[in-house]
Length: 401
Image (tube, rainbow, N blue to C red):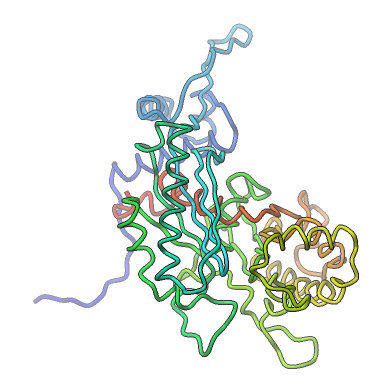
């Protein structure tokens, strides 16, 4: 009898899966701590010294780690610290936003070697994708010109764009990019570049950047609120980014919020799009980021009404996220100008009471992270590197190798 009913079970592993996971564990330890000796790695990872030695030899042969000068301490045996090799891997990150696209090339340590941006044509993805492919090609050429090894060590292309994904939208929603989501983007980019392509929403990409080189570095449980054209949240659980069942975890901007009237999505009050509407400016205006930064730094009263409404919505959002998720810290980051974010955080205080208001806290409940238009592209570039080298549950599984 051929029983085709679905059976719920976790995927098993084998020695190859365990070895792949252990490689990632070693690399993450070096990324988080800097140079470590084999003995240090064995103690920290609880792997045997022989296992660590075998892994280090393989990683060194693959050009991913390198030994430094021998260290002699007292009468003990001398030790050799090992570090990650920046040129061991590279990746390209791509941000697709409503009016602009950005591409960035990074190495294994997240150091930027090339970047460029272009305005996106209003005609949509059919013409916009040609701009994007040309942009990627230019960044790739510059990356290889600066680091010739990059062409043969590209881990892939990471793409970030606004979500949610796979959700039907009625009418023309300025906060979503339905035409781009319906376009065969990943297939087109994979064919045009020859690279493996992965997709995440912009909030998740920003959280990836914070985890790799920003305020979430070394944190196991954190929430990164992304303040960009829209609003979202990147969720870091047990040191990994949580994406949810359909890749839409953290769509904070779509949560309904009310101060007495009809409820509306949070991002209609707290986002750059809502600020542009408040100021009556064109989002595609050249130099708009610098202009708003200058207005906020000067304390311009034209921003006050928006800051008041945005702070109320974000104060509620922080309370909700702390209560539901219990993170070590919440990080406010994204493409908004630094002066604006700082004024917003000042207006957010004091935060609403929650279970995060603990006396034994070692980290602030809310902190400012990256305030950089390039943060999403950086996080998009970090994703292929993380997919290839960071310890993840999928790395232990047979289908995750």
